[in-house]
Length: 495
Image (cartoon, rainbow, N blue to C red; front, side):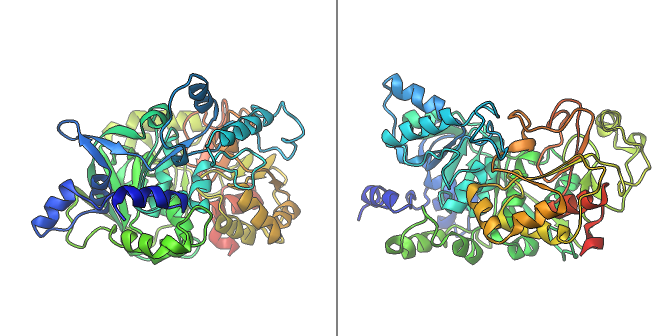
């Protein structure tokens, strides 16, 4: 079977891979040197070099958040290449209210998306998931859990947190115009440099992947990944579950890298096996043999290496207006006058906006709302961990809103089958439908003006969750513990 026939046949089986790496990786091999995972995948997808470091790349998956752009192209008579590589999940603009199917005024309404999804499927776009589809959810949850995201791929989308999918051992980035990909099946991209972040040490009780990545960003800075594709490696990462690895890669863009990756291993393959769009049994061994060639070779050289030791790290909480403003639960709000000179202006702006006092402990900071959801930590393992914290307890009386938003309809169904929804509602949380919800704040789901929310989402920018709101980022379990305490709490005292 030649390459073209293999790709054509394997698409139907849920497997789409390109030729074995050539170009740079081939040259490295000829020189007796190993390659990074990024080099291998990138070179496998080069259709043409356009000069210098700019290449035309084949795209294996394209995610769309709204079907309207696709339907416009179809109605204009534009020939679209490979509709099977495209999947559509309108996650950002939907309400997560339990009444969303009965009230079309919620969010941006659900019925138009349902009708468009039906129309897209009729036109050959088989992976268009309307809100009532059991596969609907946040696109960065849905892709991996359905097997659409696979090792060795190039995956693009408009949303910046597309870097999440890199935890499967693929290259992914956001900010891409899906119209160009739909027209050509390719994208023009400048090759970034490579950086490896080695995460070492031992994680203490109550420390989750969200704490690991917040600590990493606090150490390296929100601009540290500029111009790099980042691979997260080291014993801490290797020991994480696949779902926890998604949380790590999700925040790669918060250190200014559009691409975050983890080399695939047995944890990855076991997670993927049997999922709807994963390679079928007929192709599994062939796919696995290819995937095992992808991990970074021991003698590969990165353009930059960083090592972060997680020994003794506490649960992390942000105090300011970007994810770099994260400190341990036992630390105090920093003094802008003692900050590095190049960060003082941002620190002062953050202190003013957050209405916090330098020198005060972050532990015990009063809060008004809590949010558990988003593409960072709303998978079934995250909800199980949060439920273990709140079971048998009650949300504090001063908390005006405590939401749990599953990352997908599949996660919601699994949680309900396990009784997790009842654990949350018995504790005083509101159990919602799946979607981006308060992380995005422009879908009818938002934090009330003047309120402070502790959230397990990925951004604490000014106004991110609504006008005149303060967001404090933390792990799912820290959020759960804080809901019970009515203030920022140390989850370790709840375990």
